[in-house]
Length: 146
Image (spheres, helix red, strand yellow):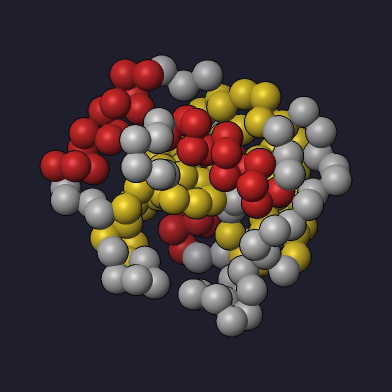
């Protein structure tokens, strides 16, 4: 699992940078492939493919939010958080300065994926450029290097 000191440092730096919303993203890998989810067409940034991700609730630890979000969005159980893959900042649909912290996670079983907030999912081997934002491409490049 990830060191608590790293999580504290990330939270402290976000506070210093006046980030208004903390978000977690998971590179869920299984059998040499990575899970991507497609946003609903009528949603903020509709139709794009993304990592399982979501907001950190007030008072919630980053690692706990990561485990919860993966479960909520995919139905999958995180068995380990293995690597920190960096963060990126963006403006949310509601205009908040947001920072997404990204981690590699392992899951007990890769199927079934039960979608609650997305239209589709795919397990990709990352041989080709995935149809994701530039920020997520950088996260996936760091994942490949690790």
